[in-house]
Length: 379
Ligand SMILES: Cc1cc2nc3c(=O)[nH]c(=O)nc-3n(C[C@H](O)[C@H](O)[C@H](O)COP(=O)(O)OP(=O)(O)OC[C@H]3O[C@@H](n4cnc5c(N)ncnc54)[C@H](O)[C@@H]3O)c2cc1C
Image 1 (tube, rainbow, N blue to C red):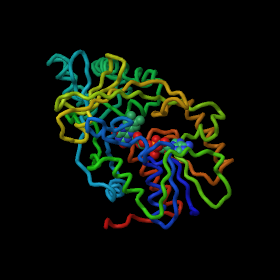
Image 2: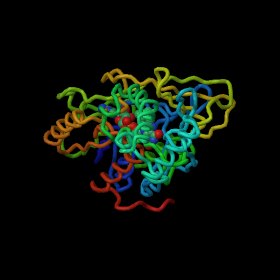
Image 3: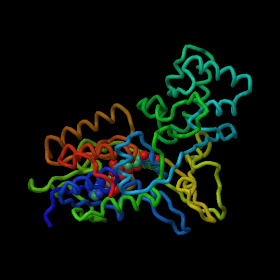
Image 4: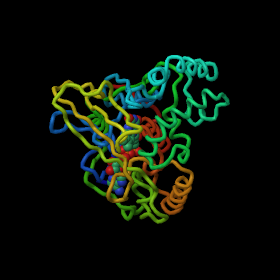
């Protein structure tokens, strides 16, 4: 069949765009080189019957009502608020580091003194990035910030990125600020949930449209851009698209190790971080995130590693100014040479997106390119 759009990549970006264009009456072919749809949000049941997030734990959270309503057309939700603890000096303390973490690690007197200094300086309930806290004029706060920096941020960042926190864009450490409160939730967004029947099922419903054809195990190449009748949305890696012409864009990869224990529950919370010990960063217990009931439980341990194009999966763009400049060269080249190809998504934009951001980006792009002006009511 003739198609109006070829969408390369069936993750959040590609699937959202494909669904919107199909609903607007366009014929869409969506391809992915993997054997499944859903991109990095894919989930599947393992040999022990536990639903696992194949590419690392994925917790949906957003403040965007538009994204929440849009995805709600394809899934029911199970409310879930993520909690994280970190092993520090032999104790498990809440992350983001908050007033309870402070109380768990310092003497009663010292914790009370720093707590009131923080509240006086920033106000109860505020969230302050660690690098900002380290520049405080108050010696007490500065000393405290140095302690948290050393014990919570430095080791974790070195393991995750092989860089020190100040060598990365400030946005990275700002993602997990110090919380001057007792709110132990990892995310503060208005909507926090997991698709009731899993991500794979949600994606299946998104792409189940008479105007959409799906081709899996299908590696799309630049040479396939022919003629001007079919438009292309490319959500793969922009450097790969141009055969790494200016050199590869740096990424971090991860090795996931999965083990299943013959017990109902192993951890007190969904994820435990190990900032200072071992060579892995965190362990997540899948069942806690999905609320699945089973006699066994599966743990996923994350070992960060360097990325080798073609051999490992590119997970995290490394947010540094020099990398952004390199990305700019690729963006300028594709704009000049491939004006009919659109680029969007975490690999094409070389930008870390949460799932809701990838979805929002695709919704906006679709509405600019002839997709439906507004969201239809749920049948
Ligand atoms: C470990 C980890 C944990 C995360 N946890 C969360 C979380 O808790 N909450 C959250 O909101 N976000 C989380 N994210 C982010 C989330 O994974 C992304 O927001 C989302 O995957 C972005 O979707 P995308 O479509 O842009 O990219 P992807 O999901 O990467 O999809 C791109 C697709 O394109 C395909 N592709 C690429 N090139 C080609 C080609 N040439 N031919 C055919 N197919 C191609 C790929 O196979 C892939 O399936 C996490 C990310 C990681 C790495």
